[in-house]
Length: 229
Ligand code: CA
Figure 1: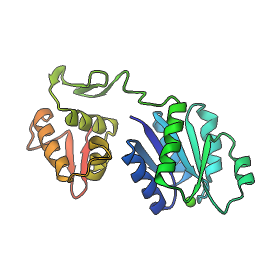
Figure 2: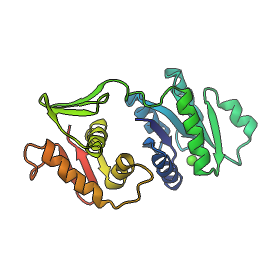
Figure 3: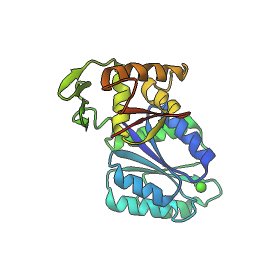
């Protein structure tokens, strides 16, 4: 999974960026403050690119960039700057950043920058080539896209595999149906949210001990679903 962190305190702008990156096929981790961003970056080492807004309450984007770069030489860093900021000053402070984008920007421009950095930082699908995700009694093999429960193969469709991967990558996190739809079906799918429920129901029949009383994929009422790790 190609993972990007978006640090932006203004919810509207953050939402706009997040939607567009998800449409472009990225998994997005959101942060509202510099502190939150650093915590998430520390916990999720598979984030390959970070978009950092400069103007934030608390520690600013430059400081986040400095601390992040001190611990990670490989991550791609893009600063989000305001037009009103003097570029000489911005570029001077941008020690460690790889790129910057000036607001307002178009979705296409932003996505192109992230794509470029993702390629450069060698982060294109790093997990896909090797390894597995485990969450007892399940093991998801990422190389041959198969699932085992207690060592027994469970036959999955590609969509079901995508759902399992998303869940197992996000243990304990409530995932909205929109997020699930975007991640698993992709950005060019414009179907109904209902398709998520239909597939979850079918997946539960395959993986739960008792599908009428699910304990692995639980329902978050009025929102979506959660993987109980
Ligand atoms: Ca801001």
